[in-house]
Image (tube, rainbow, N blue to C red; front, side, top):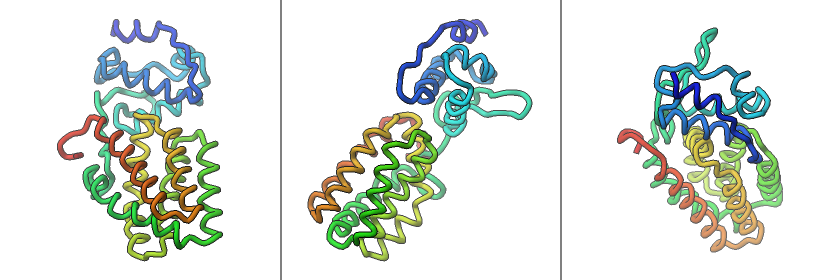
Length: 236
């Protein structure tokens, strides 16, 4: 337990805009480096809040992220314990693996974006614009992830193709799970928001070519983020 005591005693100034992400990354690193070994109980929310100089609400958000990824498990009345040194959650979701999603999404979402540029209605454009604006302001990871899935669903809807719409709707849960895990580890919200904005601008301009290109670039960046994450063979 000496490593944990030493780690806890180190003051860590948090200057990032989203403090919860910084706290999550620091604790995750401590787990991977075995300063917080498997089976150990994490310090209390009060202790962690004091260590980082932040509120307990921010600590709780970071702890929720760790549990979402499978690094920790919270046991009622006992505390939060380290249960894994790597992400235990599947990077796909449900019946779909990360590979399934990476291979299928470009086949569906790139042409869907192109058709959306040609067929979207004024009302659909308003909804897409509102989603982009709200995502830029949203700090809560789970709310942002839900809006992310809705954004991609709205593009499929705007494509006017019932097959694209149904496929994206069917994998929406898997996309949300994957998006949440990538965000927890990679912190891609700002980059994703910029990529979404470029897709939106191309759709608004009615440019099929630009919309397809913007969606292709977005999906490529998501793929790069996923490939860089540690996965088991079953998750690939």
